[in-house]
Length: 363
Image (tube, rainbow, N blue to C red; front, side, top):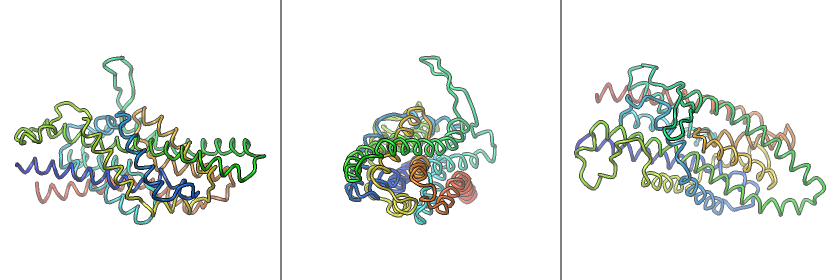
């Protein structure tokens, strides 16, 4: 087995490690509200989220294609580039998880990929695809790709949309149930929240598992193009990817790994989202989860790598603001927002530095 092939296998394991960490890091997105409202026990909620994530991961590849071919020039991407991108993302995810901050694994991955690709291109900023038109070969439809359209715009609009829609949905529910008895409200929305939590888990799988699928597909396409797999033994022939595509085994593997990470749980972040930011009852949890799930489902099918963390967090904020503006701990929100702002530049810098260090000492 050649050193290049061995490196490829190591990179695949690191990518799957990122996916596992993404599972427990972002578990809070799917179950924080249903746990905090005591509709489900933590283990019941984890089981529901793991299953819903698994199903959602099989439901599309639009985001995977964006991550794998729409953000950076793949001509400058090597297995070492992917390794450094993943290491930068993993480090940031573990740091933010330790401090209980719901930062975006999606943006950690994107920042890491941009920083590592920039390093492999020796600082040539043109390797970052800012904006480009893409024509569908079958329909002739023109869509816009690149960091500006697929990352920057959704990064700004999706949290705003989460807050506004969460506020409106909660306001409508307040009007609808204004004359209901509290016991009936809690009983009904406790049942409905199980459905909304499953929907949130499904949307999380649709949005987040695809991102790692895209990275694996990009890694295998790059390795195949470079001839790394030419000397691979027969039992590894399934790794050959002459054209950029997400193979079935990649979907299955990513879905299972994310589900396993989800089952492991991320209690620090669950505590932040479900208990510290705003106090919630089942009706509030239902409103927040329904809002976030709808937004993630729509953006997932449009190929936008939107942060599930940003969407569910701002949906909770919108619901809390509709309840009472000062019911939200805005000092905690400020810490969370700073973590969001720092994610892409910090992971890009980490991955850039890691690549330059490896390049200098290993070559």
